[in-house]
Image 1 (tube, rainbow, N blue to C red):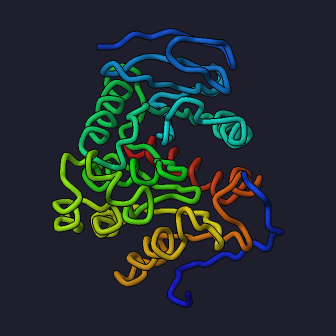
Image 2: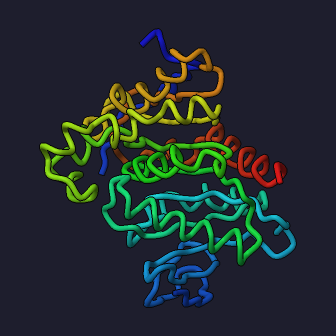
Amino acid sequence: MSFLPKLVITLVALTVVGGLTTKTVQAGEPTEIKKLILPGEAFLVADRPAFILWPAEGKRQTPQPWICYAPTLPGLPDEHEKWMHEKFLASGVAVAGIDVGEAHGGPRGRELFTKLYEELTTRRQFAKKCCLLGRSRGGLWVTGWAVENTDKVAGIAGIYPVFDFRTYPKLEQAAPAYGLTVAELESQIDKHNPIARVPALVKAKIPALLIHGDEDVVVPLKENSAEFAAKYQSAGVGDLVTLVVAKGQGHNYWEGFFRCQELIDFAIERAKVGARTE
């Protein structure tokens, strides 16, 4: 993969895997809306569970820098990511997300992302530009939204992110999220597949940092993060994307995915840049 820009190889041993209603909750406190790993708020946006993990009062800012996290499914973000999110909050950066279900980057999911964005930026003084962070299938969510909202995105970070829905969840599962049959989706692949739409991010010169294992068989590196990086490289802006390849790692809970200092520093920096551009 000599074409990859700013390639970072991490040598590690193979690890075996494994409307609006608002209510403030404490870390781990049961709630009918969402259980949080750190103190914050669980609330509804368009009848969907959403959350904010807040920095300590003294570290909050106006406008508030923030990271938009996906996939906000039940149980996510999880304990494996807690240390990472603590670092975000300690830097004064909030983390927020909305559960869009298995949207696979489709129009309903993108609509709900916009609803969350509007809630945070119009009613809660969040910055007009955020850093997106997609873990696994969350890569489809954040990229699907980002390509249509480049003016709202300061950067994209990813932890073994999916960008090509042909690899995961595959066309049969993705098609309903786009309101299409499998044949229709296949015939319109370049119109809908997030990886095919990455040139919009390239044109907007949105920086990205991705970490991905080279033994990932669930979300293959080549078709996803490597292809994402290659599109930047072929357009002559390879310096805007960094791909960290975790040697010997698959789609798992290896600690290095969630304690990648380079990714943490990137997400914090881009979130703060987004707040400064107003």
